[in-house]
Image (cartoon, rainbow, N blue to C red):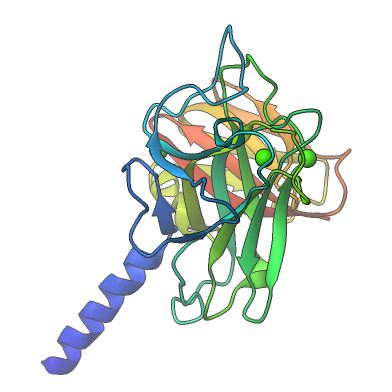
Length: 278
Ligand SMILES: [Ca+2]
Ligand SMILES: [Ca+2]
Ligand SMILES: [Ca+2]
């Protein structure tokens, strides 16, 4: 009996680790549990920030309506060099049997004459690896929108995995320059094996072929496919469409050989999966 209970608990805990392995929405006005921050000045991250993001425009600024974490270099004043880190909780991806994973992050970075960098790093078990470098405005000011990147981190899976966000104003040594800042909304660590589209597959979603050996990846669903975004291994968007149809053909002939992450919205649901282009 004990053994059955143990197996049931184990199955439940494995199930919890599927799809979304880690998520932080930064809605609360305090640093989330398990997260830690370091900085080089007295200026700090602001959590649960909902206002317009500094430098993101005057006519149509961007914001994080649900609450995000921001750093406002402009508000910190002149002559101050800032390099801030925000580190997430450690997670054992080996024990969780994760063999394929990606980070999905919504952010907005506003530079001033190129000053200011936003970086995402992951701990690979022995060193930090930079998986995303945002050097300039992303998106452009007055777009009213934020950027989304999905980054394949499969090669960095280990028993002590963790993520770190870095804001660097590039003012070292300090000058009288001030730059703008960065805002981060939802962060997710996703199991991209198949788990994150289990819900969609139950609802009749399918995709083929994988690997993509001919030119097209075909998506089929029983509800309308409203959004398709394909990211390369650097987290850059290489394809984006709003098919609003039950089938979608993604032309991949012009894309380099390698792995890609596909983000789909079908009906009310969203899913992320990985494909190979050969
Ligand atoms: Ca949020
Ligand atoms: Ca920069
Ligand atoms: Ca500064």
